[in-house]
Length: 379
Ligand code: SF4
Image (cartoon, rainbow, N blue to C red; front, side):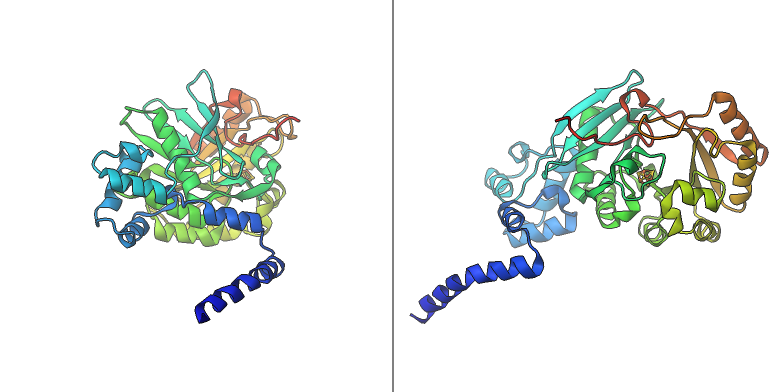
């Protein structure tokens, strides 16, 4: 009797509990209910977490490793195909977790072998990821955020504004989708976090994804083949250095002076260029820093600015990637001509810097550097 009245009291208080929840926490009740009835996504789990969860659900200790090997080594997200796991266990895993990758909604190729994929996320947003064929390897260009809050003036992603961070599963799903495209290929892969977003403003998801990428039972890709590109978020640069020392850093510099950088990249007003360069200088890494410098006609491309750039980088073990701008009709910048690019490069070489000019691939399909943006759908 006592128990029955307790339950009745609880039921009576539910509407007010939900109302309180709605008012005080400003909860989206529909979102909350959806969350409660949606299964967790297995691609969000680290190996140790999966081990723990499967152990608690009554599985044998080695099942989590087997699952990881199917998901990542064999790139199979369909539990019915996991032949070394018993049928009852496979069915139970499929009941407990959502296992599939997010769907590819669209893909585009260009004549040089660059492919861009539009991936649909569970909440209806879409994110782009790019597969680039190089001479002797492939590069995966991965996104970490939907849009970007940093609003660099020359960047199409920045012009979209920021929608949200991607989860680690949404980062990993990009890698698995691109790997499926290369089925049978076992050569070198480079993973570059240079797609949509500022990776170091989504550090938690980035770090979780990097663990699954480098995990021997996961994708087993050496962190030495991973590059994180950043506009310079010092606190998380330090975290990245500490957590993943072999990961390469590409610093998106783009200006030879702090004043011009503040104009082009508003983040520079918060994260001072001097502070970042001092950290790079003091903190000499095994891997040289790559400084990315997008050349904008008449803005940052003169020989004098090349000399300023060489002075700025003095004492930093760095190489410079010059990226002639990839024009975007919505943005007010132009690409300098080849002669200007060559003069700029020659000045840097004279100053003994290592310089590579990167004529971006994938311009025809708007997948080149700084061009990734999911345009609003036409009504
Ligand atoms: S260049 Fe990078 S950091 Fe700047 S707006 Fe674009 S995506 Fe964001």
